[in-house]
Length: 394
Length: 179
Image (cartoon, rainbow over all chains, first blue to last red; front, side, top):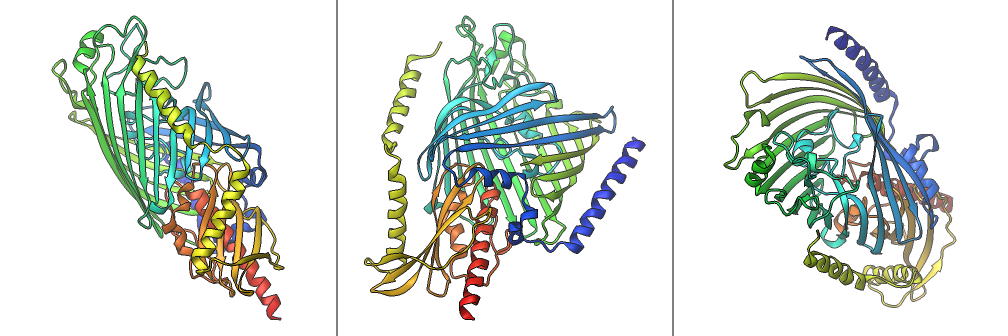
């Protein structure tokens, strides 16, 4: 533990000195991004692609993290490395895919869809896509959020990275500063013929099919609306409704599938050096008693929670670099409600404080450090965790 | 086992969507030109005008991938300029229109075509209105004099840098003419 702190303070003081120097010498503004030496990766890629009717896009994001709980052994992990490939067939038709490597050795396809631009503000999309629910589900590149780890409720309630195969529309109404998305998606898998996939501690998370030989029984509806007509503020409303899936033979047995209805509200604010965001998500699950009886699981009948976060950029706004100091409070419970088949587990009622810094060395790279204090509804459950990480997005 | 009603619902939805599909590619260029004409008519209160290629030349850069500058003439007199530019978005590019008065003060900024979904929020009329009435001496600062849009950071910065480049290039042209 002491070694860790020494290591951490050494690393961070180095970065901070750099930030100070940057502050003194750099009077860089967005304006001077146009100077050639300031172009970063994604801009270079865009430059190669854009302006021509067809072409390949290469990009990606990644995060390499160090988690050190105060009471356990630490972990160093290449949490995810995602390579983006896009191909533009013509002015209207584009294919986008993201290949994800999780923990170095697990390979997934995070997104793979064809986007057909019908008109300015109306797109039809089909393929493997992200289910829009809250903020992180859609915007999860490490430079877009504070904290080494994503907010925990985006793991246990939402559950990111949530993607399924589907078809739908996405677009905007410019006069109203309004964005809409509506999709028909494949749902969660609740029973694979062997066991129930959904459990009390992580809710729906274990049921994500991720487009891998996924079982479809009935379609689910997902929609998100964003409003950004008020300066510096963006508001989101997400909804999801449907039923889970079960394999053939199993789906005739009562309790093999459950109903899912989810509602999300989110807000993001950014003004000068100050930024803030918040999110509320609630999911109501039906037929969980039959499911728990059949599978012996402890799935709750309602899960939900919220977080609020505020951050302040310590460096002058005109600087190319940013150093955000932030604090986040989260409260979420995967046993917000339970049916008659089980009793509430207080260990699933979780609360977290996260305090940290995000040092954006350039547009697209970030060095993060934070301390989390976590506890559950159980007595003496409080523990702390240090996290350090680097993230890139290009 | 998929319920039949679900399948019908699925294909009905897709069928209804397909009504919106435009059939030929040339219609895009035509629609852009139509949109430009419509904006000029509204902004300059002139139904009758001509567009002539301007002799003013500026250089492209990574935030201004292509552009055109045309003079708007009403009854033979210079009423302003129509500037169209192409700037990068996350994985594609977008086209925008800026209408200037004869002194290069912005009368209107609008996005003509935004090709991908990501970052399309910059087409918001409210957000674009921040550029109006600004003159070539101004340099916009993202997050300060131009408000950020959460979730559209790349395109907001791209548009801001693109307009800054246009402004500084036009200012150089103006000072050359002034000499």
